[in-house]
Length: 159
Length: 353
Image (cartoon, rainbow over all chains, first blue to last red; front, side):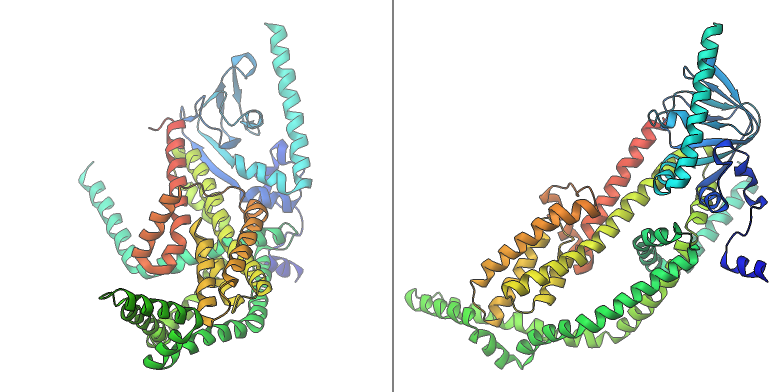
């Protein structure tokens, strides 16, 4: 009976598989179901063919992409070693987002790829309006950022 | 392209055109519903952030608005209609006596005497009869106003059904806002995806901001003007306040027309003409508060348009569809202008043109 009531009211009783795709990303991993619902509201699924360009260097940054499956190649000076391949569970544009809203690198799909796109404004708006959700997301952002910095430093030593 | 493709595209085109023809009457409803949704959206979001399901949030907001409307209706409508009636009553008598009443008003009487005097001094001038004829025409138009409203009974019923349908349409627009956005974006090719995303955000921001700004400005200015004018002692302050609130949508000229209406009322009701100066002063203070406190908080940025362009826009709006279009013309033109500008800039930066 409770299931029916929950269903009619549109409430989520417990974690279910509805947001499993979102949960596979580090950024959204520890959000509660309601926060997941908020994030899923602003997610847009995009699919790219092999060798299709996702964006070019110098384009305005309007969306952050999360890779559902496939592979994306990024080329630009902010990437460790100037070039990097990203796969399932990784995100594109999150670091550029906090720099300035212009793409610092070029992205091309290496094979058939499905991405989740989140608008920059929606993303920042979500973080600003929901402090608890915002802290969770931003602290994961910091984690990713520091990993990226160490990556860059590591490659710098090798060269 | 081969024949099959052409035929199929042709079929799509035919279906599309037929669809538009079939639904052509509801575009007005839809536009109003979208406008209403923009007004309600922030409130619904506020409730939704407090973990209330979206549909329930909408219902709560609706009930609150209904309550507010009923309270407003019970509290202010009788006063409003009384103040409107007292003006209509002055004008509503038969033509001759109405003319005599108007000519008997202190200010107009003075003016008439002055003109008659002038006629005596300067031969062949006859300004006085011209003046009387002019006033007579004005009275006639004002007198016929209620009759015009009664004759358009059908239109009144149409308006009522319109008012009932709009909240219902808005309910679904607000509830499934994200689904609609997703649906539209899923149709966009990858090349234009980020461009469309940015444009949609821009539309959301600009349109939403101006609808909300207009709405709040009307209410706040109407209240402030009503209070200010009742303190000063202008007759029919609430009626003039509501008129001034609506007129305030037009930058530069709106506030002036509010004072104009107040001045006319003061002259017609035969109050002391010195009140006009006090009314102008009151209006100036209201504008000071509005421009420095209310507007920056509600809207943030001002409509930056040259007064000449504003004037031309308002006149053009008047030619299209009367007072309603005069009121919405300036925000409409400004929104279209800023969207076209955003589109152009985005097309350039995404290297599409």
